[in-house]
Every structure is written in C-alpha cells, then in structure tokens.
Image (tube, rainbow, N blue to C red; front, side, top):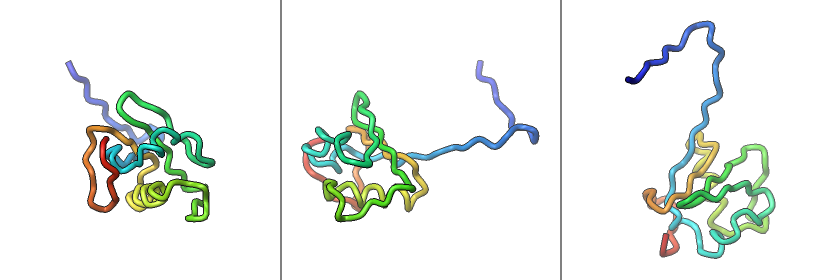
Length: 103
C-alpha cells in the first residue's frame, strides 16, 4: 500500500535538485575513460554511465584543460536549472549537442 505524504505548513522547505538525463553518446570515449581526472569535474561512475555535478560556483571556460564537449553540456544543464548531469547509456540523445558514436 502506498502512503501519500502531505506537506504541512510547518515542514521546512527542502532543497530539491534536478538533473539532465543525457546519453553517454555525448561524451567521447577518452572523456568517458577519464571523466574524474579533469580539474573541477566531480563525477561518479554508475552501472550504465556517470553522475556529474554541474557546479555553478566554478568558473569553467574554454581555456580550461577540459574536453571540448563538457562545457556545452554543463551550460545546457545550468540553462535548464539542473545541478547534475546523469550520463546514461539508455538516455536519449539531443540534437542540441554533438554525439560521438557508441554509447
């Protein structure tokens, strides 16, 4: 039996964060293999991809030693109020970003 949880006025507001669900095809194979090695990137390996934090505090620019596909991905996540990007082999691809072959 499912229980419905009602919010009460005395319940504190909880921070709820969203994530961009994105195909791993938007990452190059080399980027996938080294995702945690780039300065400023916080990413956790999952069974089918990675969960990456899209930090608003860090100043990511084209001059950083990052793969070229990461900055547009972070910008897309931020533009859609997402705090994280979930790279998943089964997630949809988007025409807003390039793809790099196999998932």
